[in-house]
Length: 264
Image (cartoon, rainbow, N blue to C red; front, side):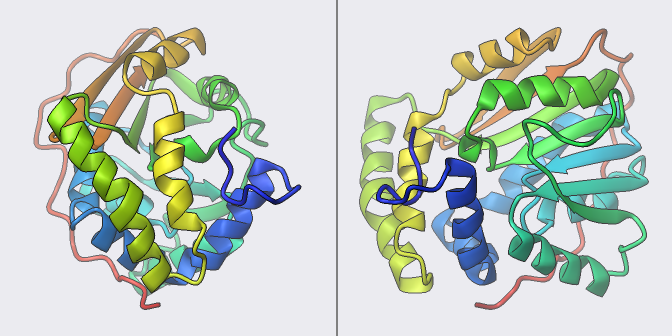
């Protein structure tokens, strides 16, 4: 199992919590730099797969500083409430500040939860989202089963996650960037030198594409597929619980207002 701190006796959950609590103040800006400014467009693309289902209550898992939760209520008219869950108190504190600044505290709430065993009742949410967080879960199949339990029938799970390109040339270029440049940027901007060495290792270790689809299907989702975004460094997974809803007309998303970015 890949963990942030190889010499630590802590569980992966505790290590990940500690890591994100430490890098929280720099997290938004570092994401922008490391993804070459693409992280927001990747999130928006992921939400475009959710919009046709017109969910009202969405669970945002590994919500971090709340960017996806904010985008959901700002760009998707159907969404009335978002519950953002994470294990990092500091990340959610920053998220709550952004939500307050935008006047969205009545529609977005934050809650610390273990993604493999939440306190939510069955069939609670119309949909769930996870953006760039599932690779940090200690037990991805268990988390998939838990999400299947708490999503309502005909509900949908949308995951955006970093991935390795399948094209050999692009894969070589990616590995050079991920293995050398990302840790260097992380050490320069962050107080935690291990966090951005862990990042490319966690991407390489997680199940990708067909393997992730198989996990979602084994968890009980009746339909699952993936969509790769060029050059293959981001993959979106969509999984439906039970029978899919009838097609809903497009134009279900609006333009996204600017979101506050925290300074480190």
